[in-house]
Image 1 (cartoon, one colour):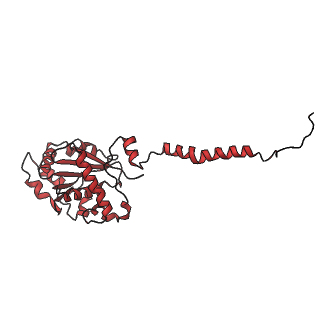
Image 2 (cartoon, rainbow, N blue to C red):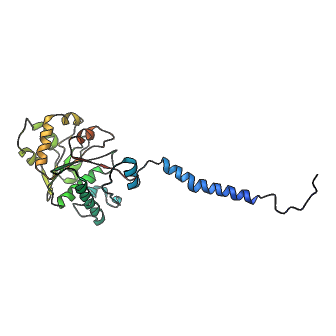
Amino acid sequence: DSPAVTPTSPFEPDKSSIHRTGALIFLACFILIPMAFEFIDNRVKSPWDIEVFLGWDLIAGIPKISTIKEAERPLIVGNELDDGLMESFRSMFSRIQMNSTADGPKSILITSAIPSEGKSLLAANLAYSCANHGRRTILLDFDLRRPGLHKFCGVSNDKGLLTLINEIHGEHGTEPERNALTEIYPNLYVLPSGGKTRAATEMLARPDFDILLSNLKKLCDILIIDSPPVGLFPDSMAMARKVDEVLCVIRYG
């Protein structure tokens, strides 16, 4: 047996073990676990997320939209409600002009993955911005399941896209389309949906629709089309083949 000796350090608590355990807990709580959550979090929170994970170009970011009352959001540019937000839409207009592959009249489809991401308010404010830049602009409501542009534009929805398409019989001049447009702002005209339908894809397959779309392009410099969420309905996917460019609106988070 070894002779008893006076201990030089306490047996308990083991300070070195405590230090090691504390360091591991710190590493797990403040480094490893946050990194794991970030790795599995697939929400969009930055331009980097858009460009790296989705492979798309970020045209613009619209900040602090929540500071504007919901009913007034489509009129931010039209009513000059916020200088910072207006500057964001000016930047969006400029980026679209720079990145566009279309030389002539542009047709731009605006959609989102799910409802309530802001596609209609973005379509409206972009249309106002285009008009402010001297472009003759038509804002078309192609959300034929839940039309809403006519409400904030203050126009009737009795006549519009659906009534026009039903009146077309072969090729004709642009007079019917011109008469269906309502000027709501200098250089800005709106064509409401003219009702509701679930048969949008069938309507798009008709030759009459191509005639209507061609005639609308003759009447404007930029045609902006508000469409249903692409993640819920096939309407936007079918319409995307008939336009020059597509903008997808993604809500933060």
